[in-house]
Amino acid sequence: MSNAAAIRREPADIAPLIDATDRRLIQATQEGLPRVPRPYHAIAEQLGLSAEDVMARLRRMLETGIIRRIGAVPNHYALGYQANGMSVWDVPEERLRELGRKIGELDFVSHCYHRPRHFPDWPYNLFAMVHGRDRAQVEAKVAQIAALLGAADHGHTVLYSTRILKKTGLRIGL
Image (cartoon, rainbow, N blue to C red; front, side):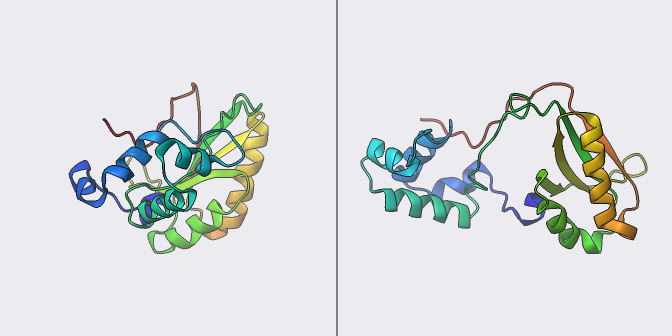
């Protein structure tokens, strides 16, 4: 559940925590890692650093919340997953972390996070993205989540994607 555990920092807060080398590293990776067998070594060579230094700097930035994650961002449509549904759940606040971790560990959930409710119109506080080749496949996976939640599921629905949004990570200027 990235929202509950993530450290949120404003740009002014980040500046004192990174040095010029960190800034160059962020700039070198903000469009993604190189698609080579050893991406950290390629970045290290580009920046004149050791691969160990690159990995240690990225690890430190992850641990301090300067960056939240390093991961693949697949194009689900290109992979044949045409039905992409954000399942939204009304679960008890006191069980949010526990239930979010369980859902997030499911192999068919790409991301799971907490969002605030907006009563009376929006009672949902836990979101989990589910991908399928068609809506029937997504609905079957959502039924699995509902079974996992049991009585903690106080209501849910699925919001299907209607278009692809460009996903971007941290951007830092020169």
